[in-house]
Image (cartoon, rainbow over all chains, first blue to last red; front, side):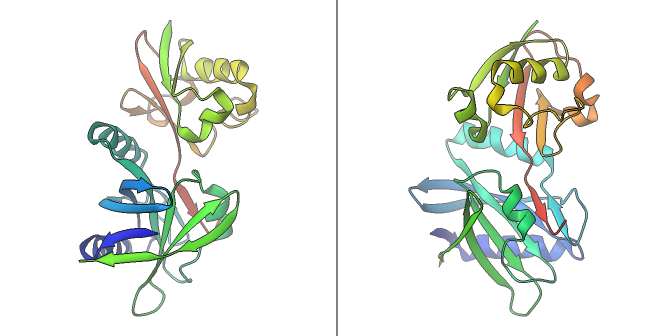
Length: 136
Length: 93
């Protein structure tokens, strides 16, 4: 399960909307205990792929985020990105490129209104949806 | 010349669980090649067969992404810290 505040959910959606017409993306920082993770920070990243079909987190944002979580004793929990014209489900490339079995992969679909957000675990190519718990 | 290389969690199982290793080499290419020789299980995950950087690996010398400072030819000095991080990317390729 992924725990989020409404403000952090809205920060992810705003990042994705600002990136239009390209895919938007960013990193999730927080604390994990077993399969439950609490997001304490949403780090927006430029999509260096600058594409409506592909995303890549800026390598400088990635390094800075890893450095900072080490300092404060948090973890990089995962990544979020948008699908501008398809559903909120990982594409075959998303699955193949998933770098870390401990991560949470959040998809934001901007295809329909209202925006759809879903979260997944991707372990050895197997995709499992998890609940998102939104708290104030 | 010895540099410290920080290993990402996803590569640690193939590298004896180590979080950092010390490697001799004066360029990024030499260091990544040396790592692959020392830990054959990571063959193909750092460098391509033609010696270029793997597309989905970010390599940094201190704060610099090596893609902007010469790629595999990027120089490494004594006491530099090298960080390896898998690129975070996806999409409908």
